[in-house]
Length: 163
Image 1 (cartoon, rainbow, N blue to C red):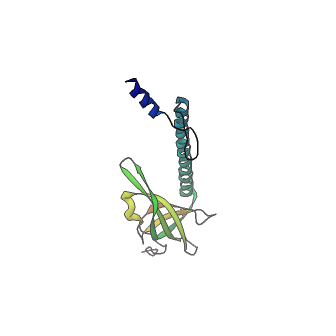
Image 2 (tube, one colour; image 1 turned 90 degrees about the vertical axis):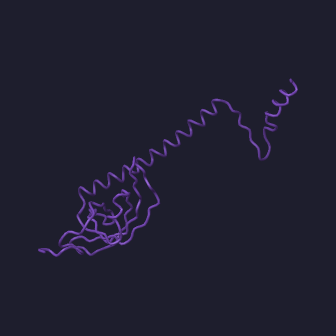
Image 3 (cartoon, helix red, strand yellow; image 1 turned 60 degrees about the horizontal axis):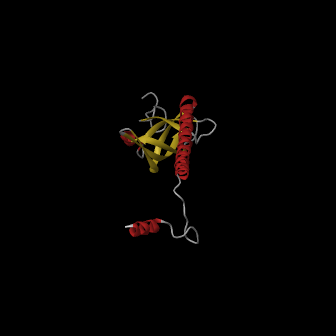
């Protein structure tokens, strides 16, 4: 019996502790704890980074909605932005919208906007749809969507004023 136990223990030991193509990490508890803690720190840092980015986008959108110049935008093209967020039972899909922006007293121009849209509201953002937007007066390519629907009277594509 001792012969079998010795054989088993001998089999379990690493044959080499070095050399090309091999490495040996002793399973010391402090090393395992360091690896786990290090992994958790990296995951936490990545989460903080993305949460700050999302927070900046939300603050910028709120600023534009409060202070931006009103306008209308027609959806020229819709592309999937490559991400889907699931919050509870609701999914939000990242869309890249190519827009033709119309503002009172300015020539129409094109702009792109990436936005997470609720799966329930996708029909409002199809090609040809009109959106209410708020535009940064200092940067016309910085805009936020204020609403979806038909354009207001007097704007291009809308009912004529007085109709």
